[in-house]
Image (cartoon, rainbow, N blue to C red; front, side, top):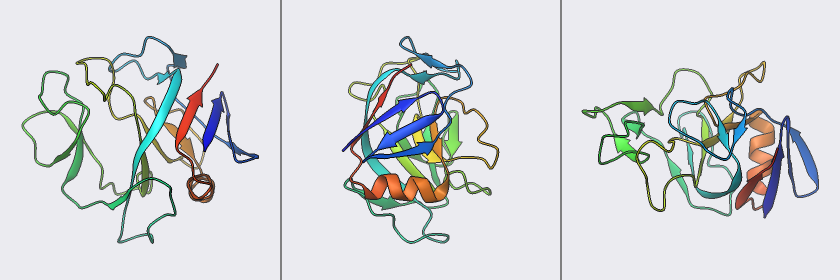
Length: 162
């Protein structure tokens, strides 16, 4: 099922949810570190979750549990750029097993992944919002309950429009 993201909302399956996205706005020319959410069609590739905190979410896409050593490489010079990695890594990587709840569920969105091109952006996720729905570094965020509901609709892609 296709969802539509516009500034402030994500609509999927006839429901509209409060959403936040990148502090750099919505951009067609996404680059690493710009804080922007890429415009276009972002397929949902897989769903990751914290098994110590939550039951597996319902999803039409493959669901995989996280481990404390999971990370996501955000170093454009590394061969594992924009990929799930095991930590420690001899490059910059985002820790996915966080102390806060932001990554309790992560929908991995297909951006700069087929093929990966260095510097065009990494770690574009659909994940849990901060309580104040603060802007992200480029990800799309929903409340935990809304994220679970959106995934359960059979969500397969997000169309990002400005």
